Each structure stands twice: as C-alpha cells, then as structure tokens.
Image 1 (cartoon, rainbow, N blue to C red):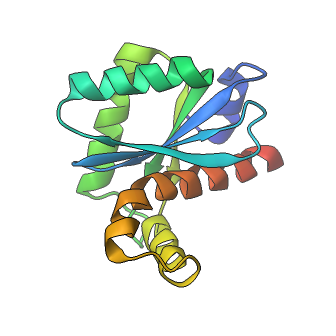
Image 2: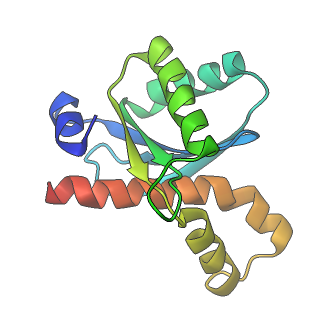
Image 3: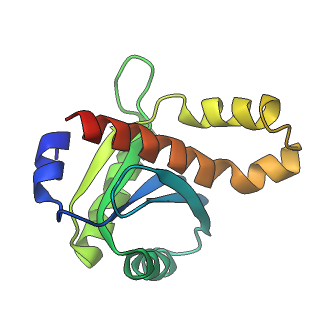
Length: 152
C-alpha cells in the first residue's frame, strides 16, 4: 500500500508503530496519537513468531495503534534483497493476526545513520549502542515516514 492509500485507510487519530525488522531482533518505535513524533519504544528478541505476535498485540493495545510501518531495507540500487523479502513475509504474517493497515518505508542506511549518531552525538559504548540501535533505527524510520505523511 502506498503512502496515500495508507493515509486514507487510517483512523483520524491513533498511533503508528514503526518496525526495524531483523532475524534476531525487532526494533520497535511508536508515534504519538497525532502522528507527529516517533519515539524509540523497545526491542523484541525474536524467539518465535507466536511470541513476536503476542508482544506486538500488547503494544498495539497499550499504545492505541491504528497502523504499522515496516522499514524496507532496499539495496543501494533500489532492488530488494533477502532481508527485504523476509520483511515483507513477516509483515504479511503479522497482517493475518492484527488486521491493521500497513505499509513499507525505504530504510536504506537508517541503521548506519543512527549508529553514527550514537557514536559521535551521544558517545555510547559499543555494548550500550547494541542495546538501543534497533529501536532507535525504528524511530528513525518511523520519523521519516511521519514527516512524509504530514507533507502528503
């Protein structure tokens, strides 16, 4: 679903979740109800899809979520590699359970941008960076999407 279709499918008010998908971890960010600001929320350690979905459903209920945004890790040439395919498959499986509008947002270099910020801007150690990188990348992805959504 493109950004216009996604915006049209959303309720007038409600938070969005942003995901930075990984095979081992799922970074999660959540917007405010007015969809202006993305905030790093948590990292879901991926053990099984059943546990993933329980955690996601809890966040949806707790944060009044009405839509999902998945960072789509495209290659630099715009093509989609293995992780992008896995991200799309994961989104499809989540959709079977939660039935909320969802879309994808190009996340090229988001993790690298966030890691550079955490090194130079915040000066976090490697161990501390690892603990916040995925959820911070999710917030970076979601904020980019929210900014585009406001302009649309």
